[in-house]
Length: 167
Image 1: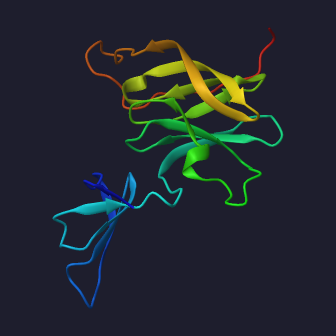
Image 2: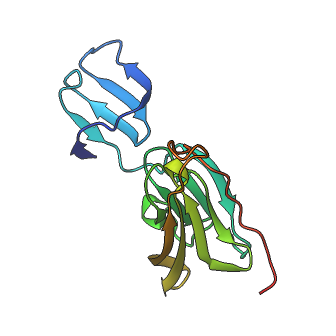
């Protein structure tokens, strides 16, 4: 566990019935534990848990999964690993920022990943392999934040879909 301030947007709380100083909260960032009624928190970094808006998979075998996380950007990870520990937090890589919504690989080229965040902001990244089956570097290709239809407000989330097309 790592000492930290608890992430916001709490979704669950547990109070130890035998010790009201001991609390556990589930939130957009994962799981946090307090032993002093919430004065200090320890972030539990040993479980790969998250709250996704949506998930997608690419076309390679074995496939990778991508998704936008509430308050934590967009991420991708392999669906399988050779590690005896299984898929861990270290296997995930960031493909977009902000309040991640949708993330999807190009159906014809899994190294190109599209992601969306709040207000309709979209980006295209080229992920470069730096080790066998691991994507650790990404280059941002574009970013746009369109205005709302009335020219004033912005949309919270826009539609995004990557489709196969002739090149």
